[in-house]
Length: 320
Image (tube, rainbow, N blue to C red; front, side, top):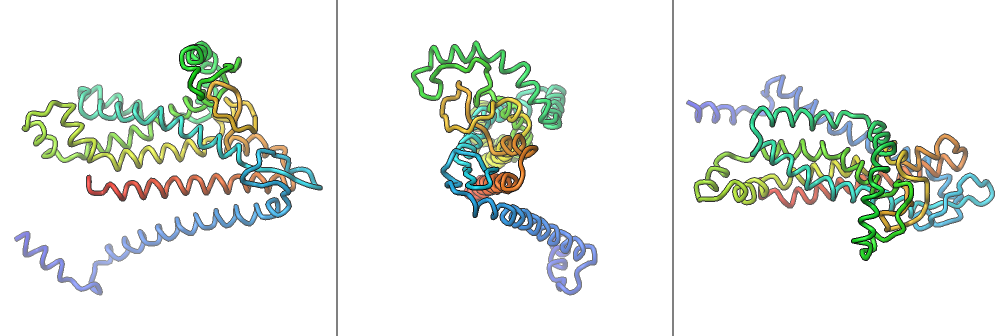
């Protein structure tokens, strides 16, 4: 009966499709086209608004670390330091948050009792709803002060590594502090996506691994992680996208500084989003256009990250 019904359905001409199918297909196609138009509109707006300052800029926009676009005679500004700070903060957050998120997701799905798993899942989802300004207040009021002794230990024992070279900032408002706060902010995103994809692992795959004598960890390593790798990568890239564009928390923690410094325990560096938020209230003329140009760079970086994530996920489809 099932074979006959499916064959009959397959023979239905396209012109005689049900009205609901036609409406749904058209709505889905329209939504896809609409999001592309919105994306193109945003890119066009940023490009048009940034052209005046880019044409008047007497410095190299991509390599200069200066920022003086409000000078009417010879405005000079560049985003090299801002690009470096943006990428560095996002990478720190991603490196710190991803392993923890995977561990939490595996614990919720395969180790925790059902009631505890439900509570933990609710708490993780709740963390994603906390406003970024709250994370910023927590970071600048509490976290940076508590981290100063830890930074001293890092300098003492790991100071031979350039990233942890001193002197340690007396305020604790460093790129590592900002990265830690961003890691907490993106943790719920990566955890939620990893949890969902781990729950979708076919039961036959897990039972087959256990039937062959594998322990629970070996089952996870051989059956769960390969299957869930595309989802974990996608969640990590979504989290990195939020870290790249985060504004208030970073602006509250980092001291405004346009330098390129790889030293995580020293004050310095700034991100594009935080710089725009701090500079916009006092900007005028070419200053506004320059900030829009910086926003265009951030738009391009975020787009490149998402395209790269899509490419990586498509290369891993054999595990799905």
